[in-house]
Length: 181
Image (cartoon, rainbow, N blue to C red; front, side, top):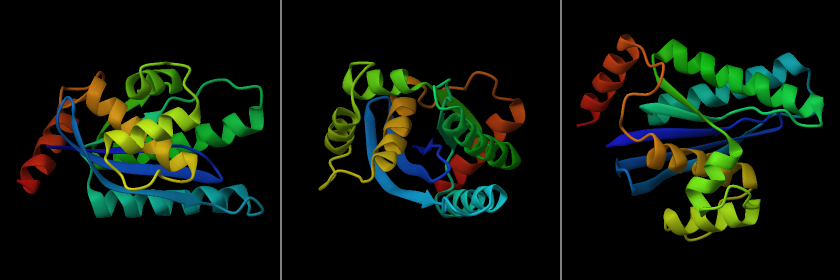
């Protein structure tokens, strides 16, 4: 069993979704939430709020791997900067804990979950709800996107060694996995 944390980085709303994957196509829901930071707070306080929230999720659910949305260029530079800063926090926390990291593009996630790389948010949410057999769609969209990232990783990365994973990260992941057995 592999526990996967999906992180949809955002400065105002950072989606975090946790799933377990027993095999390449068998996933089960564990938890989903959104870490929020007030738009009127100073940037450093917003980043601290998100860091604290991610630490809480990491401490509570102890994932084996973190799947993060790969930041891509957008027309809104301010938005992409906040997204990149939050992604950096998730990457740093993973490195501090020796966790494997996988970066997935939005189109890769959409293609994995819906079969179409240009699917809209509603289609992604519908498929996440169906795949995880949820009673209701996760809201807001950031929550569904975080679960979609985790599902994408389970279906495309699974339990195999990740590109760029160090021997120490592999050993740490194996030890965490063994402690759950």
